[in-house]
Length: 184
Image (cartoon, rainbow, N blue to C red):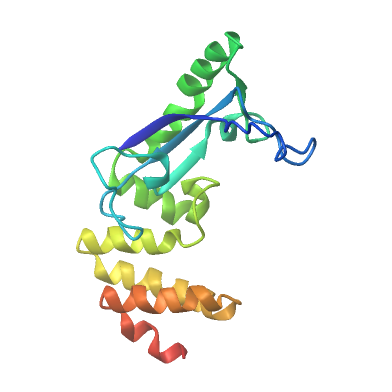
């Protein structure tokens, strides 16, 4: 399921949180968020309703990611020309990109070809766990096992103490606890 939403900049009546050059004052500005939600990739839980928010999506981008240099673009609410610019970027770049993920098979192909970066710059490093959940949901446990073995090895080599505990629980909940034991 594809997702497009508008995020409004927060109103800060005190003005204390804006620091020129460091923390922008985004009041009166907006950005466009895009995502792909895959129900079988439910590691972070299911949405509370049928309404899907951008934070429910496993694959996420901001519209600015599709601009030259890919940066966090916030448009001014008073700028009428921004609607034309946004429409052009959506039609020519962003929506065609989302269409690359029109099915679970295409999503898996993109992951196998590009790794987590295929899912966008806002995608967590643990995207392999989401892909493993999708493989399990599609009765491809051996593919999930191979992916998880590789992921567990990379986590064990790094300094990820809090994530190691989470990963151990994740593996046990899905019946892959044996992947953890040889690496302790």
